[in-house]
Amino acid sequence: MERYIGLDVHAQSCTLVVLSPTGKQLKQEVVETNGAALKQVLRAIPGEKRICLEEGTQSAWLYELLRGEAKDVVVVMPGKRPGAKDDARDAAALAETLRAGHSLRRVYKGVGPYSELRAAVRSYEMLRSDVARTKNRLKALFRSRGLLPPGGEAFREQEHAAWTAHLPRQHQRSAEVLLAELKVLETLWSQAEERLHEASKQHRIVKLLATAPAIGPIRSAQIVATVVTPHRFRTKRQFWAYCGLSIVTRSSADWVKDRNGKWVRAQTQQSRGLNRNRCGTLKEVFKGAAHLVAYRMTSHPLNADYQRLLERGLKPNLAMVTMARRISAAVLAMWKHEEAYDTKKHQSMTSAQA
Image 1 (cartoon, rainbow, N blue to C red):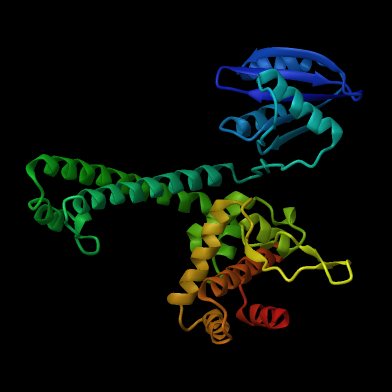
Image 2: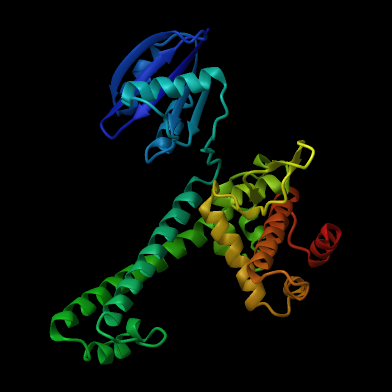
């Protein structure tokens, strides 16, 4: 007998609701957010257990903790639900969604052999963001006093001192504190990058994917740590949707009546854009790689493809998306076949698509 369990998770407590296959509520309990306590409660529930919880800070930990206690553990993206709201209702709604087999926006939580690589990538990305944020704060401080240091002069100690002298005395200390913070963060960022390279050495596939144009070792590590296995995606189009590179069209008022009173499709303008439900890391990786190919790698065959797209009248932003899609498709194929990047194969593939 199957049991469908909804778990509404908070920092100190979890609300658990158990449903039968017919939808009858069999149990409702509040449990401390503690691994041993959750396992004890789940082991007391008979039958095959299927657990559903929402994506959040603790979802990865709970997935790893509970997957040995249940037949299936599903992590879903939280959605808006009309009507009254409390922990018990939220848990019951999760269990009912799983029981009824409604369309679920599942979040992949498997890490495979890449747990250390994923942790290293996360540390690297957080410190990179912190460095960029501190630089922006420092530039904003100078800009607020009408000063615009060119390039990176505000971040280098010698030039920084010269520009700081132009600030009012009450702002000079703030600039010195921000520069000190930036130095510490840059040191930590370098250490995180070293850790990332060390973790990447344990996986041959990272080195293999780094041969793709404008990918390199860091972007390759980000791809592997995020995707884990390429066989999650049957085709490149599914991978494009996951990366936020899938083109979607939106329209409204599609049908009108003609002179004879029949409904015909209206000649309405359809707006096009990229799908919003995506992995932000991969979108940043592939669009960054496309930007590098378009503006830096002028001798690469993909750059020639980009120039041809522009000559055909395609807008630069759309041409950039096309290049990102081509690079991502190549990376997926390389990973599935465990092959290094081959320019000739990529050219024949892109020409066939054209």
